[in-house]
Length: 421
Image (cartoon, rainbow, N blue to C red; front, top):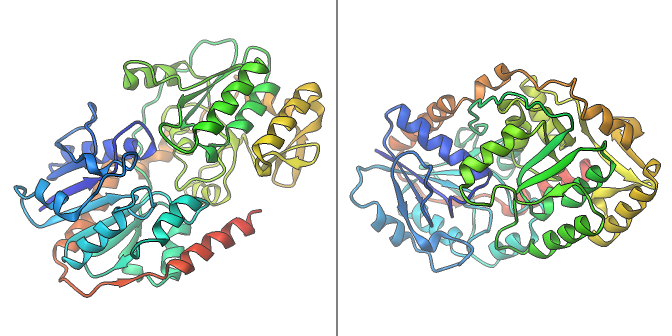
């Protein structure tokens, strides 16, 4: 049996970090695996094969036959572990998955994110093609939270065909730097849902000497214009913000260097499948500040985790910042700089002025959460759970293929957004 991890690319990002941990854990446990992506990645443990047609940035023609040809020399049965196959990033992926399902291939469909969760371009691409949620005896879904599991089950997926497995997280504690001022890093690709304008708002209101940084730019994507807008705003307003600090030479080493020099992590994201920053703050032993995400907050609480310096809303002149257009956010940012008392942070039912909240949240007295909270998410635990699914698929008989109700899934995410609005 060969476990085959598949993703569009292995460029730096959250899914790539998960895949690096998966491959390393499989190697440690002596499990036979291979990773396929559109390009190599120097720090991947184990074997890798390249299929350029996987890269959604180029949207080349991708066929099931191309994948099959790439692994024909490997021991069967094959367990195809495909990351984010239903996200709509590649115009051919849904068709490839359907062909694999009908060919009787064994599939683990690992859903980190959903096109239905406010990704209209991706959902439109999916809707123009074949169904994208196949169901069969040799198909198993992996999701990151109980919310996502329940959404799939409501759409018709049997309970024994979906498993909640949190992302693998390896503790990598860094000593706290001897810095007199806060150094805050946002470990993210600076795309729209990461809410860059809100990070700038916090930077504008932070204590003197504080400095903020993002690790990655948006890459080749529709988010480039928004990214360039916020870069320009930060420059014009002379905000203490550095951009894409790990995209210089030697990315991996550089990433660790910047985490080591940071005193805090930040997340202002509005939507996450798992929210790696909420866990990596513990793994790297840094306090986390920023915006709470309701279903992530609930998932954290299920594991006894509560980050004390997260807010549920930030308001400028009674307008919730994240709900405004980029133009309005820019105006609100300028107003906030002129008069910081206009800005309020809401935590639960309590509101405080943002300047006071930031001074407290960035205080050096606050310590990170204990590493022991991550014990259930060790990569080896993750690998064992995945291998258990693979063993069940190995022994499963081929079956007819049906489809989940994609409209039920779409409406489920709409209800989730309305509930937390």
